[in-house]
Length: 303
Length: 295
Image (cartoon, rainbow over all chains, first blue to last red; front, side, top):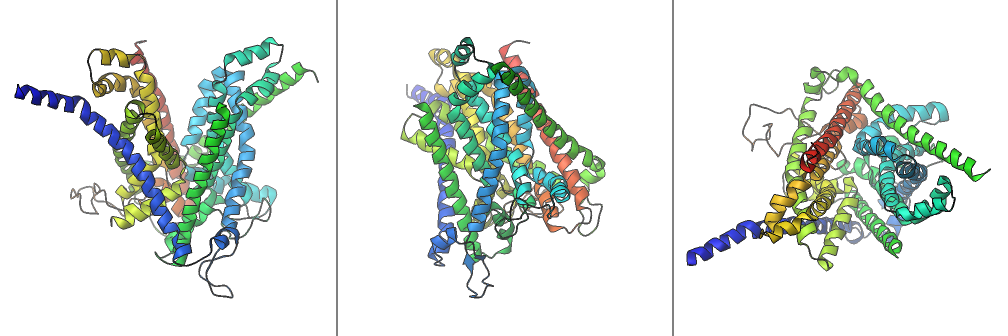
């Protein structure tokens, strides 16, 4: 009797509890990892303001980045406005280029020619995602930069180059999420519109786009968020000067570029190094803001 | 302009936009492979890199990329599949599930350079491993885990529709149902997700700069002492990958033929991505067909 009990427990363990424990453990890993990222980056990132007493206001709203204190006052300055501005302008310009194309592709895939859409465009979009960002950066350096230099002047490395590279990189994000949104629109809407005598284009503009509005907006915000976080491709082509860009052909730098370039040059615990950690904290906070915006859009779309 | 003419013009414009995007992709890939064609030989692929002189290869970097890919997949796949199963089958709706979803979203939206810096802080400095293959693998695990978890969750959800009740009704436990009924039919989708993730792992660079490091010391394949950093099988050796190498030679400029090497290395990366993408399609389709019984 007792032996049977043991066997039952063993079987139950083997058939259910181990598996459940493993699955639960994996779920827990995600939570633990996320929380440790938040905690570590926050404690490291706050050093600039707590240990070094630099003001948060200056950190965000001052464009004076002088980490070694080589200026007149010889006090290190960690104003990151140039980087914040650089990241913002690159991302928004890239989205302005990319969003119309992405939405057009999504419309094409679902309404104009679903066959070409699923056989050609869908795999193409997946390939665009697959191309590594250094390769995009390298194409930028070896093709785009000389091209801009010859045809538009300047040194080639420019805001424009950064915008173009990023706009190609975020195209798949915008396309695939807009396409998902368009696909889930009830067929009745489209058929009702056709039935009323609307042309396909009228249906797209008056029915499809409004009905998929929240999905398309989500795709655009995700695109901006991806553009904000992209590091190497932008860093390779944007010129990395710590100045506000003088027009589209001017050079500038971004939050991620400065992290990429300076982290290796600084010693742990110095003000410069801690300022870089504060920039990573800033990027973490920015991704939170994007998540909140996306959730808000999703909620509004449900209503 | 009548509505019909407008409709015609819009259709033509949409056709043009779509073909331009395809043209862009084809010319990007064609250009990269064409430019790197001279480098696609064994001397370049397996050769040692040189500093300060021309004619170096990418042998160690290629080897590092491959080993990093394998180590990362060994960590990521079980975690992703497990978490996907948990979310699809075990997690109860409520606060906890919301927290997990928020965590996944947070992880997915983190810039990869920030993940790399977290890796530098925890996996490189705090553990004392230094720049190492393993630290790099853990960092890319963080980047790929959310995506893979989502793929697995969806795969398990779609696969368990209908068949789950039947299996549970026959007296199988939940885990037995998942293991024997749901997972096999979810496999094509999971595998496709894994292979696409593999492509991304292979090309990742930003998260690796400060975790796997920017140096590729030559490794000794005859040395089986895994705890020795010179051994090719050690997890704790610095492991600069191909993608990182492209970035490094481009920003340092210590190699006279950096352009040629970057072209060659880019071609290798693109070809790898093409192979991963095509095989994901083929394997997904084959498995689906054999499972659905259409062939």
